[in-house]
Length: 428
Image (cartoon, rainbow, N blue to C red; front, side, top):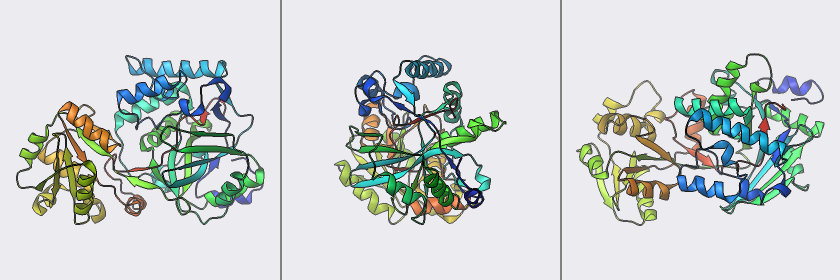
């Protein structure tokens, strides 16, 4: 970060280094509305009808960049790059006049969340500055890397959290929100979004000093973080590929919600899933509605590992797994907190051993929305495995030990809306 004085550089060296950048933003006069051009993060837009809804909301919706549609991956990514260049040339998107950090606010559903968007200097897990907590899927990293490489842009910020002391960055945020925002919009989910730029050297130095004392947990965006690191390896000279677009949230001030990510077993009917269980779990039929079934799941997870199966018009609660089965199927070289995770037991015991389902896209889909998971299972004749969320402190403690959870174990939120500010590596 280009800030005044060397003291801030010295203080922040071991920790987070967040750099201002020239954000690329939609020109409001050139689009139907800012809300109509935004999207959830790419991995939340999982249903074709959701994709079509976003594409039809506005011809310039950001989903045309983050999830371009074409026959092959290479064609899709080139299409995104051409679209981005055309929107910049036509004045649909435009860069801000000077580098800035951006204060981003989301408000809705009883939540107020504020944080800083900037270009974060990349670091490996071994350096202990940015802590991943989930494994990643190589084919997703490859896809995101090709898109990012082809567009030379960070199209959506990762969500990172840290535990601040309330000064520095917090004070900068508090001052910024007293000013008129750069943009203000309400998306169709009812969340209100506002964005401010921070360019004052004293504010940038104050934020840098505090952030330099902290490490961050990746709350959302493990595949994009792995993509950043892969592309940095391809560009060995110092430059814009050494940084990646992130949103940093101080969860001491603005706690996030942690939700589960459900599994959809596309080729396994519920009847077959239940038949394969034998005596390995206790199985209890739970009549709907979904909310009642989720309450039953929450109660069962308080006592141990538990899951809900759906897809045949009803719900089946799986709990009280056979201890001997767990001992045989869950690896013992990890901490107890990892060995007892629902996601660990699901993947190690149920998917790998009982159901023998490979972790491939055609066999397993990962779905954030509970109702969507159930509906898709019923439509496809598959099985939805509904999960209960893990506590944030468990996630953070495992990450600090350098232990990653099974992929797609958690969903932190609210997630930043995609399309409010982009980063072009050509400008940085």
